Every structure is written in C-alpha cells, then in structure tokens.
Amino acid sequence: VAAVLAGLACGTASGADDDAALMALGKTLFTVGAVPPCALCHTLKDAGATGAIGPAFDDLQPGPDQVIAALRSGIGAMPSYRGNLSDEQMRALARYVSKASGGAR
Image (cartoon, rainbow, N blue to C red):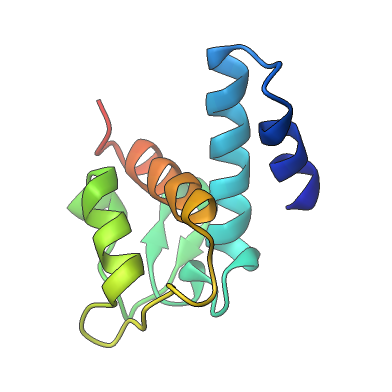
C-alpha cells in the first residue's frame, strides 16, 4: 500500500499510470488493506470476493460518489471508514469498486 501511495505522490506518471496505481491501491484496500476489508462482506468478481453480508457490487455497479458516501458515513451494517482511511484511499477504493463492477463508464 505504501509503495502505491508513494508512486501516486511522485506525480510523474501518465494518466493511464495514475489510474492503474489508483486501481491497484483500491484493490489492495478492498481485499486486505481496509479494516475490516471490504471483501469480508461484499461480492466483487474482480477481487475474488464472495462476502454475503453487503451488496454484490457486480450487480449494484455503484458510481464512485456512492462508494465514497458509504465509506464516509457508513450505511446499514457497514461502519464509517472516515477514521480509518484517508481521502486519497477512499478515492482509490471508490475508483476500484466502481470501475471493477462496471459502474464507471
């Protein structure tokens, strides 16, 4: 996670590299980096996640704004991640979930 963040901070990567770095960080946060990890509760084929508590993102296909809102405030049984994730990490996670599920076009 730190290496991906360091790569983002350099500012020397192209737009495609920036998106790839965001996607990599988002996937890491989704699978193991967030506490608790999103994959524990949610289903997302790209991440190999089969959680059965939260919505299946492949079906829901949320946009990045929806994901960020849920991360900041929590929703239903999901806690807020405001104290656990930085804004940059939330943006990366939102980009990953949205794009990997087909929500970002």
